[in-house]
Image (cartoon, rainbow, N blue to C red; front, top):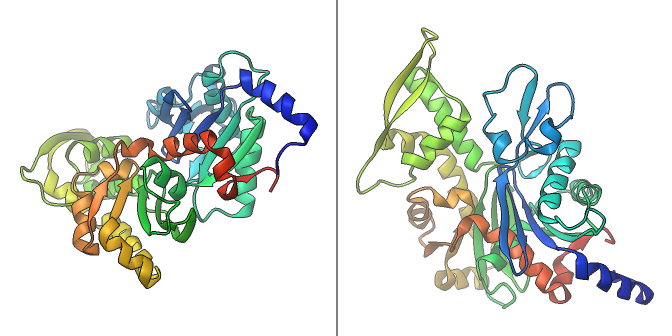
Length: 355
């Protein structure tokens, strides 16, 4: 619903002093993109609080990168938490404080001039969860909040022609969820959100190390292993790295050498589940649109698409051309900012507090 005529000059005046922003509110990372400026914030979706309370440490400074460094390392009085799980808000109060911190970090001029915000959300989010995201963003300081499904934002950010009557298939492998969608004419022909993504890969490595090496490691260490030597397909030159942890038998610290072949074995199950989701999408796509995908192929984005050989793993299963989007980490955030640039065109696919 557009503002009343007598409010439009006020809306325009406020907009002159406001820095509107698009936000990719992810389970693992939050990215903020400002039209004309690009990505201005890319920080972990982690907040450090005093245990047993929702009091953020250091007046909000223990948010993002600083808070992530505390994961697994905090004393008994401090807790580093992720307020989002599987792409949706699990702790509303902490999410609101995290959003307020990021909004104020961008909007340095004044706390009184509130921005318009476009927030990406999972495609299978419920109406109650949609309302929770809108309310959290409004209380965090937004003047007006719009929601857009992650696959559509990712498609825009990846430069796909989603406005045309042709099938575009995108797979967004994030931290908490993998979004698989087939898009045509600004609509989701098929969409599914699966809670298997980067975090599940990290847990698979943790389980493998405990089961096969009798070594206890934390998820931050597992993530470093994944980034350093992880892969979804055989490498031309296999790698190895030293991994420190705690021996599950003796309880003492020790270090072991881990090979990339072992990491690939640990990641095989989550990778299989993600590729199966893409297969299911193809099975549910109408024949004429499915035929388009032989030419247009599949586009991968999100942090999980940076796993070595993930495009080859998809191509082997789907028997379609597969490519990784340019700058895959920022596709969704850049897509949300593009919506702000073209609100008059995209308003039909956006949800807002007026809906």
